[in-house]
Image (cartoon, rainbow, N blue to C red; front, side):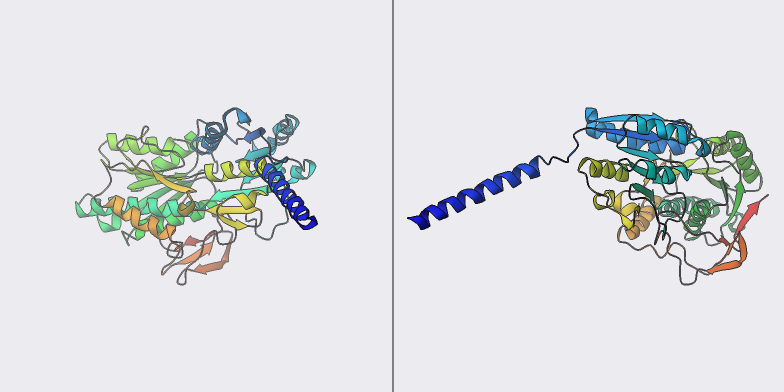
Length: 398
């Protein structure tokens, strides 16, 4: 009798324990039902880079609705970030996202240990010691750049085949903001994508020394067109270069445009070929979910984890191609794009920065890089680190 009583009591305890554990799993006390989320933009949503980043905010609102309160600050220059950051902290933000290049967010994170600070990476974060509540992230843009280059190369080859240009006139132009490794990595990947189709292609790069200036970008684009470029793309933040290409087409000069961050199909419907973009939504949605569950952000984000820094490409949806202009691109372009993207999806990334090329560091000419064995971009950090200008095939326009 005692034994039966003991077993009954033990069974009851087990059932009660399971019920309690189940209750805790279904209703964990640490789960936050509502969050206040801050966004700080270096520009406003009229510019491609900020517009593209703001899509992550839209995705949060669509997914969580009234469960999230979102506060935004636009046109925040890197050296003017402290006031809006402190203001968002005072508003009770649980997590703040920033798409600028200031070091202040990392420094101020120490003052607000209960807030998670997430910044698009602006430097090589490998081996850097950062606060536990500070995180960086970026999509591996070189993958989209390379695929964009394939699209441009297919069009250029078509122009060669149809006698519009000769093989030695296969010149692409790049309107670039600054000679940073992020920009250099992007335009190099683009050119190597072009060269995978047209081996004779070369590139001219015009720096504007500004991230966002319509006048400077327009001027640089016009100079590149005058120098004979038949395809332009950019790493700047206005529609200027796309407009220049469209105007050239209206003047019976074939100059095509490849977009970055935001489609230019409406601005340049005749000249636009395709656009590649970094998708910020996967990281932002996962980071917010982690905060809701009171978990470490990097435990919830799917990508390549580099400490508190995360990156990913096509395979995780962090990079995508959009608005392929089927009325303009060369036949077979979609298939060529799909083939390259499939390689990225399988984890094959060593074919991009590879070939019979030598690169020279513009900051230190004694530092060179031979691409015979290849260079793996974003291997240890989300910030692009390829900082070499390929000799003989890339010319910097003064």
